Image (cartoon, rainbow, N blue to C red; front, side):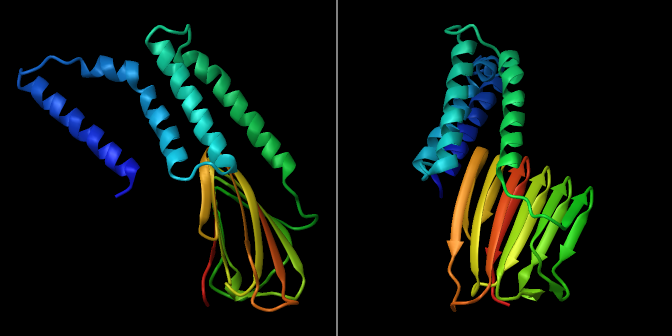
Length: 236
């Protein structure tokens, strides 16, 4: 059992015992008031857990730091140490997230030519043969599924630029090909070949080496905003 599961389970047990004792008249602990005051402790523990479970890499470190700062500031405001409340937090939080998402979109590469857009719908290339081309894939409140095991792939470089906004993109690649994955996530997650990152801000970069020289090289760049992108390797 992970440390986070153990902690959540322990908190739920303690909360259940307190509510039960209150209902039986044995105690009069103001659970609601305590929750309203100390709920930011959950953000602090979340950040600490990210650091303890290997969050010292890139975007994970940033996410953990943001959670710790937000949690401590909100807690200090709730107990009267700072003149800060939740309205102030939301006033700054969403504009900052939008700015980060915009910077992420501007930073990543786009492919000149074909755009594949799934808006309130889906794109499915998993069941039949298809020709792989360098292209842009956009999932806006929709989903995109690509299975490169069924694709016709030439011995050259490909770039797949993938953007998921409140949507998801799933890509399956053959394990014998060279695949280079790089991407960022804002309030979402990216998982490349078994290694992932997410949270408030996340980033990941993974490379899979091909089995033979001179084969195709597939570069996948992902941007996720309140969505997710996953690349996984599977045998045919």
